[in-house]
Image 1 (cartoon, rainbow over the protein chains, first blue to last red):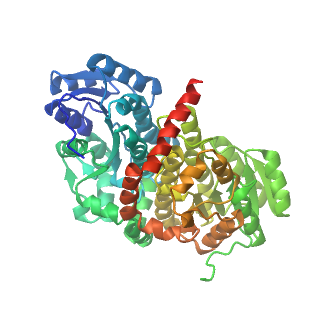
Image 2: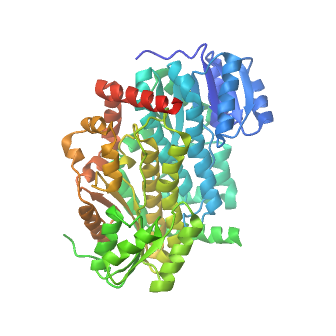
Image 3: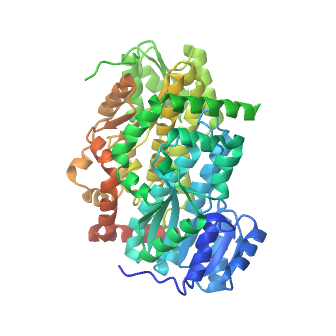
Length: 286
Length: 286
């Protein structure tokens, strides 16, 4: 398959006022695409669009609201004449907590935004994307396949997003359109900093250092994450990984996961981290 | 076969979606091992009839897994009746009314499957966990081979089951310090009402034709229940019925990219998707 030329295309990126979404929109614009920056806060979305350049517009909208995603797509079509690419990037992470102690509203909220939001974005964009042989990008995560201990709603949502992206790719092939799943490790975004560094004196970051080897903790810049998405689009790649080491872990997931899961289960340091997380959660409730 | 490490005799179990199929067989066979069982189903009358067929230490409860309060009430009733709860099997699940692409399925249908199959499991987990932890019991979540097989034409089910697997894996690590455990059960095609209905849909033979015969072998609910009960007796992290799906799962990271790619280029698969796309969209119009 030839390279997918981004010049002259129209892209919609959700959660694009900052972080990975912003970088994706900015780099798509650099390649000659017109971009719509969608974010919860319309004002922030417009400011981001201004920073990106002349072929960028900002839109306010909540991805969990089917009406809002439909309206956003309609507005993009009206403004730019169509929609070729949708990047379902909007996502949140919960504070570190066990499935037993996480607040149910919080669990639900993460699923709503990360998974239902991606589904609503895809559904709103599909008529245009199918018609124009375009692309939909889903943001998976290493949590699409790594053990989701203390990150239950996030991992559940990202496993679901992966399944959605794979099914959709098979379904779109006949239209000359495609879907991709891009898996990120740790990216220096507000999402990662809030859940790992800022919450509870950096408990999340400390917990990860106990659980994972150092080479799996490397953080990448949002620029690098955005560049990965742009490259995946240009190649119509079924999947892309950043950092790249996670591709190999994914390939061996079926063999590695049972072994790693078992190790986590038996590891006393992991047990201590779980106990500490459950203690923190009950303090939060109190 | 290894000797059981968890004796079901004298334990108390709750099984959701247990008026028939895998749930019923699981409840019946745990009762045969000496457990007291609560049969939960949407229809209280059917649940009570099923409990009567099972035996003297069985009660039937009506309850909807999409209602958190109903699940909390069910657990409270089990505790009141039997003095506690040791094993909860989150089995209740539904399938799409008919195979449909992401593009063609209605939003309500997609979310209905998701509500029952993923959020229903989550609500069951949340309601049961305090007892399970206190009594060092077991939480069993029923996933499917769709947790790793491509969900083409069946996306909400695949998305939900991928999420259920992830929930169960994380939970197992989090429960280990408490001396409790979680298991994920993966069934292939079991001869239940869910699968019979799916196989009777007009396009289902075409979907089945895409798979090798050995993958399509249907097992009886009795075999599925027996597999589940053996898994509970072993506190097994993963329970596969038929067993050889274990090997498909182990190789998923390598095999899935290849199979997914084949689906994109396979003429039969793509012809089927075209029809699924067109038909459901037409039905929507009419």
